[in-house]
Image: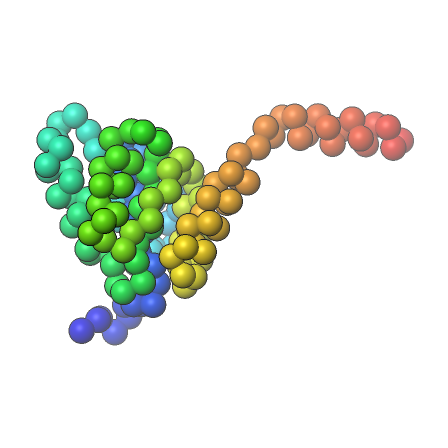
Length: 149
């Protein structure tokens, strides 16, 4: 039975990254959004064997899965965290999205009432939209203001 304050209607989120990157990213997201339920970070590093890392990922997925599926956000396509997560897709209701950044994580956490496929698309779009060459944008804006004067 779910705890009284526990929301079982949301998609679970597991960050699977190299080292402590996922933990730090989750801390940053919680600074923006507040504490998050059904969201965990698992770090993959050289101090832990493959079997131990796989078990940690598997346990995290099971812990956050509340009936709506789980999104695994990984840092690098082709990296160990991604390949390990992908290997669990057969046995779990899981979608894996690579290239996690803070905009992707925040959008994912804000949209977990969506179905798994729609949430995966939204996460990917938010991650891509969050990447900007900010200096170029400011220069372009300044140049446009200069021409308008």
